Length: 309
Image (cartoon, rainbow, N blue to C red):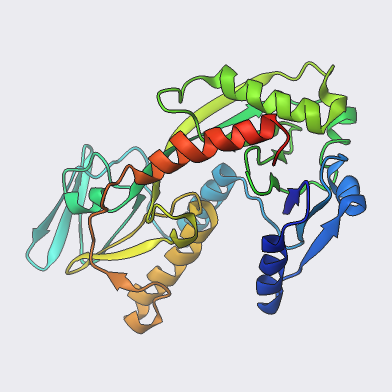
């Protein structure tokens, strides 16, 4: 993964010091190295993390499902739980197609909106709409000149146009849409193209086209980015909820899920990585959206247009 900046930032130096002290392979890189890694002269300073930074969430999820089935788990898709009620010492979970009795229940839905059972869980997070897009596959000759390192790439400090190029040579990016404009795919594609044409001049006459666009709702535990950690809630006897993963869920969710499963199987609650908390209602749950969608992202786009980032 690469975080690239136009100019030097002491915050990036401090980040490198912290993570190297934990044993990670991460270093400061200058303009010459960034030109080789990214294929652009735009950035003069940055961080290169050499230990990964990208995952295909669709393939990853299907891979975990396949592994679980091989180990004897039974998987049921298209079976949303519509009720969870105590029955003796166990819990009955009801779906439109049937039900199950369980002694232990773990709710791993990130957010909990739209569920009639345990409504307190739905009020614990700070929701934020996000969107993403993918271009049509690039010609190989062009793809080889854009981010030839193949790293996950983001800009510091704005992070407006995080970029990966997938195995089909598609460019994939994500952003936060404006209020009331989550479905304006062409608008955000236009923002992305303007950035590409400036940072990678070879794209200006390439006829890059939009292939796919999608949106979704993130559930965040805090309205402050650096305090936004996943939460593990004790909902009732026999019921826990691993939630509010924000945008970290693709990787952090499975790691925390393995820890939680091991704790349940071994009955060793002291081995939990997260503290077990009581659900607590978020005060002013739209605060993250107000700060991010209404203030920070518009300012970041303005700074990007003016070349101030």
